[in-house]
Structures are given as C-alpha cells and as structure tokens.
Amino acid sequence: MDGSPHAHPRSPSGSRTREFRRGWRCAAIALVLSQGATRAALGGEDGDMRVLPCRPTISCSADLVPPGALEIEAGYGARFVRYRGFIHSEPVLVKLTLLSWLQVQAGGNGLLFTTGDVSRSLYYFDDFTFALKAHFVDQSSMRPSVAASAAVNVPSFDRSDAFPFAYDGSFWAYASKDFGAPGEAGSIHLDLNGGVNVWQFDIAQRSVQAFGTLAWSMALPLHLGVMTEVYGFTDAGRIAPKDSGLLMGLSYSPTPTIMFDLGGDVSVFPSTRRFTLFAGVTFIPFRLWGP
Image (cartoon, rainbow, N blue to C red):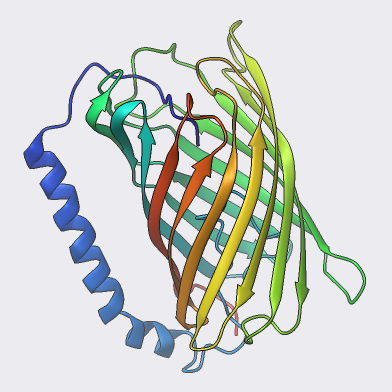
C-alpha cells in the first residue's frame, strides 16, 4: 500500500505495457467463457461454495473456503503519487484449503511500473509471498470466527537492486462476523485484522511495522455489494512508510464462486500516496477434492 516501493532504474516501455493490457483483456474473456465449466465442476448450483476475497480490501476474512477448493484473486491497482504520476501493480493471490482449518497461499504484486511525472522510474517484479493460514474458531450468533496467518516474502527473479537482498515476514490475526445470511440482500459482513510486518528480518537494517484494519461490506439486490474499509500502518522507514486511509468499492457477484470489484482508496498521508484506483476479480475455478 505504500507509495514508495523498491526502486528500479529501468523505465517501462510502451510495447511491454500494451502487451500486459492485452493480456488482461484476454484473461477477462477467458474467465467469462470458463464460468459454465466452473459451475459444472463445482456441482451446477455451486452449493455452499462462495468466494472469500482478501482484495481489494487489506482486511481478509477469518473463514476459509472448503477443503480442496482453489481460490484465485487477480487485480489491477494504480496509485497516484507525487508529483503527477502513477505506480501500477497487478496483484495475484492463489489460495488452496488443505484441511477445514488450514490453508496455503501464494502471491505477489506482480509487475510494478510507473507512468507520468514521478520522483523515480520503476519497472520490476515485486517479491513473492508464501503463507500458511490457520482457522481456529467458527463464528456463532454471539462470537466471531478467528484465524491467524504467517507469511514470508521472497525476493523475485527480477527484483529492485535499490534495496539489499532480504526476506520479509508478516503475521496477521483475523476476526470476522456475519449479520444475516451471507450473500442475501441486506446481509452485513465485518472483518477486523491486525498484526506486524517485519521488513528485512535477516539483515541488520530490519524494521517493524504494526497495522490495523476494519472492513465492512453489505450485499445489495441484483448480486451487487458495497464495501468500506479504514486502516492504518505505522512508519517503517523508506521500505514501508506510514499509510492510513479510507477505501470504498462496489462488487458484483453473478454466482457465489465469482466476484468482480471496482473502487478507490484515499490516503491520509499525501506525501506517501494520494489515492489508489483498483479493479479485479476473485473466483473458484475448481475443487481438487471433496464432495
């Protein structure tokens, strides 16, 4: 979320940018065409299977999709930073639930590059993230569901050389609560997250960043939804400056196993990042095992 990702001396070329745009359009068409096969693979009407996106909000649900279900999140974000430019990212997160209480995750912010008038040009692949997430308690009429996760960020094959080769750690706690049947118009979902990021934990220049997030979403008629989130990150130096803001977005879920999102995120600290525009999709293409 910070406005100063690791620098890279190279600038993006127009041809490469157009290639990625064409790739996103092809991916969107393929996703739409695959929905008939997806519904058949998951049992026609999808049963109780439904996506539980971690993006575009920072907050994630404490709940997991059923064992064997593969959940994929893909998006695009453009952060407006000083002076009059954007930092573009293409985050992807893949999640596979192994057991009813355990999930493995892998992802990253993809290609990061800049356009417009920015303080420095960027063009590199961001770090890869690998995580384990454990679900401890199911929600009831009175209590929320509870989970925790631990992740490690590994430098990519085409990383920035402005920072030393180092690994990062991330530790999260989750609490989630539904009010009303999930997906039904008028139902509300809350996610409260908190934790710490340990940047460059394997070298002397390590720094610790605490954070907290609260996300609220409500299902609307016609498979639509609205979401709002407030969040804050403490200052961890040049690798992850302080950030806090308000995120708002809309979602559309034609089936329980797919959700599209679109919105914006305004930062409290313009020196870090003024605002972010985002769009993306979360879907379950198939279930590897289970009923």
